[in-house]
Image 1 (cartoon, helix red, strand yellow):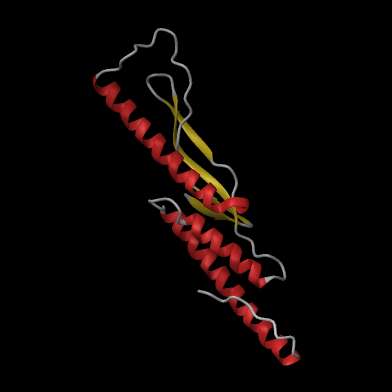
Image 2 (cartoon, helix red, strand yellow):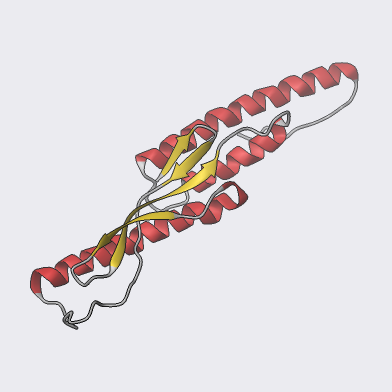
Length: 157
């Protein structure tokens, strides 16, 4: 899942850490334990894929995934939640760089196959920041045009 936290944002749903089987644990769980383990493994796989998608697309603006773990009945730690911090601050005095950065933040927030409500919120906040940057770039281009500098900017929506 992705969440804005002041100058940074976090991306989050969860994943798991394999450890060795404790001594004396049975090799093949059965019944309810087997179902619980299958569910933990499934959650772990989904959480890790979700957070890794955020981190991969976020690039330099994203941190490494962090996970919350739950110990399964087999003694193995499984990821059940996670987050990836992402920098959502505008680039000072550079609206074009801010536009590009917010494009990356939006893509990172929506990268998982199943973006969470928090991920969608971070994407919406990045869209608003991107729009402010587009307006600032237009204002600067207009001011530069009056001064004859002829600067142009990319204001793709």
